[in-house]
Length: 299
Image 1: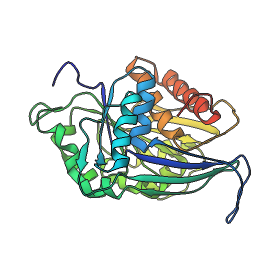
Image 2: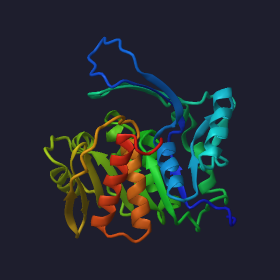
Image 3: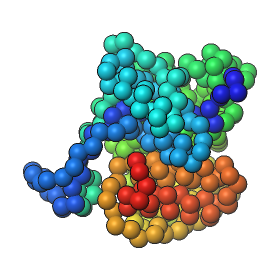
């Protein structure tokens, strides 16, 4: 590794977010005026962009095509302070995309096309074992933000791999539909899991009514450390041997939701990296998420 080594690795999806937003409340079949944006996104990229805004130097381990959209992504990421030089570049896999519709009543629908990341498999992890970031006997010892867009088989491999044993792992599902992919890594001693209330329920196969209740349930399920959010309701931080704490978010006018959880996770990681207490880190993450969903900070 060189002096230019990143501060943190973000492993998972890097893709183009195509988001349609309108202040109008929408139902199925609605056709309303609004705005459509196309920006770098994906869980790993969203976290990396937030970390860059906090002054860190993130690098992404992901799959990016050698197509025109991939070249655009590389250029756009450099301008956002995100290092894509370690990404797996495929000649035959296209750059992934995500499409969502957001109304005044929240996320209406979304489709994630992350098939290239899934097909790339463990090729995206090569820098962790070939000496660029680590190797057998000298694994990466810094923080890693990992997202659930990876396949179950690859997440299971990560859970058992000595290349991840020394890292500070911060893990988030890509969506409720992929939450159960995290089951293999739930009990890892060096893992902190970030989920929303619905995702916590899917992991525990039960319904929770509050974030503190969900945090207790995840700890009982084998997790070592969990952060649970619940929209505009109280969020919770649970840790084995330290109990569960909670705090409410600041009320704001919600103008967007895609990427809010990733912003929460990145802000929490940064706060803890700077030595914040559990309570202060939770408060900092909630404030960053509030600023994001209100539109007071850029994507």
